[in-house]
Length: 172
Image (tube, rainbow, N blue to C red):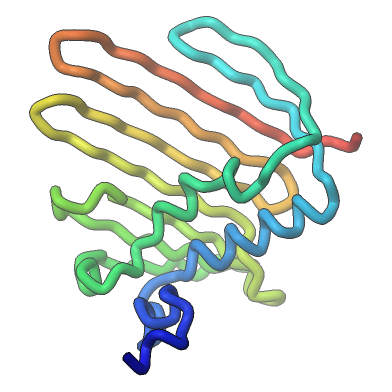
């Protein structure tokens, strides 16, 4: 009963997040892009067919939803990721990796500026495999520049499909 007054995400993460808080970072980026009415140029390729789209009327939370869905801070996943940090001259590169077949997010790499403590880049690798289909996705987000999504879907005995969306932020 006492949790009814709390936001469900607060209850879910009552104790602090164990790994990098990807949803908060992406939400902040999406809100910033939304407030600027940011335009984007997308190079879209699906099964070898390509086209370019330029748009400014984007609902950024929906557009970047796959990044938010890649949150590895679920309580059941705690301790399932190996963490490795590389200390470079101007940035830290933090890698979270799991071999657990039940977890679809396999790898998250976060690059953080040492001086400002701001996230510069995020890379996510996702994989789902069962008897019906196999899905592999790679997601890339670079603060202030753009994002990329690549994927392959194989549905047993029916079809294989590949796609990529390479997006760059542009001036309107």
